[in-house]
Length: 434
Image (cartoon, one colour):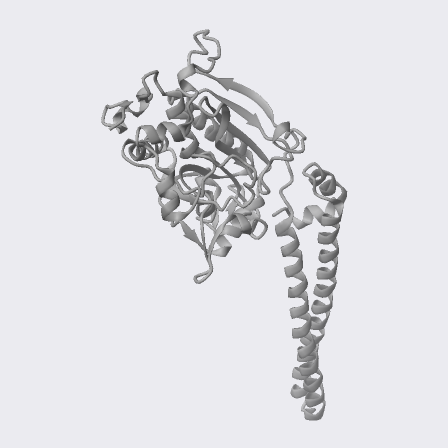
């Protein structure tokens, strides 16, 4: 969440920054009003507490002087004021919770260099890459034999069975089989080998507490997009970012250990509540998918280098996978609620003739760390400071899988995979029908 002190000290600046994201000034005014009420309740509580403490001293003095009647009179008054003090404390806590709740719904303040825009159509393409680009080869077109979408290729080669996935779990739950399943496993091994040991490998739980989901900003605002196990009050993770953000929740780290970098391969679960009207065929939008995440805790000064490193790793992998891609600087209207700045990486899939998001690399400033209370102790002394968090996919597999089989489709209907996957596919890079 954003710092309440920023709202107090520069309310107009906060309103202007959040207006870039489409947040109405009234939402910030509601936080300000709740904060004013909270501080008034705190003042009343502190005044009562001071009175009770003063009375306690006077009771002691009366007893020491042997004035039992005065001591009893003061004790009675102290007990009555003590009850008022407890009520005032509860009222202050209630108002404080209103402030926290209101802050949980405010998105992050965007970085100054984030482009303005209303939605995905206003994102800014900053570069693109294709195989042979450095050698002077022109950006490739779409060959006739690549006009086949991955779900048809997957069915023909018995790699993907969406129908049986639907029978088992409902729509948008894919079932991979044979070499299709092996390709998915190969991609994960390829990614983990690429990132370790620079990023410590973590295998976190894929069900988490409400506090863990809240720390990243997925709750309470985006509850409809997540799977909730109501009986146990646990949530299926939408991304490994969720448990990694809380790995050091409530801790104070030494600045010397930063940046701390982690990678995790997990299943991810998303209800895709807002997918109505979008293309949900094949693997374009699914409820369950595998992804390798990269994550870092940093100092404020390290954060942008950490974001650049994750983006470079994602780009390097897509280049090794020989997929054409582009990098987008997301505009204010397309940022996630928690992000201060995000770069998306999209691979081109010729079978669906579309750019598919395969990685999203975000810097959150201290927005998530304030929720999770992850801080660091500066080398030069002084009060602990909140860390910054950075994360990105390297990579998310359904759309990479789709782009690989569409780009790798040969004229005879087989699929040729890139050389980088040979060690993970038993040396066999040509996928044929069984």
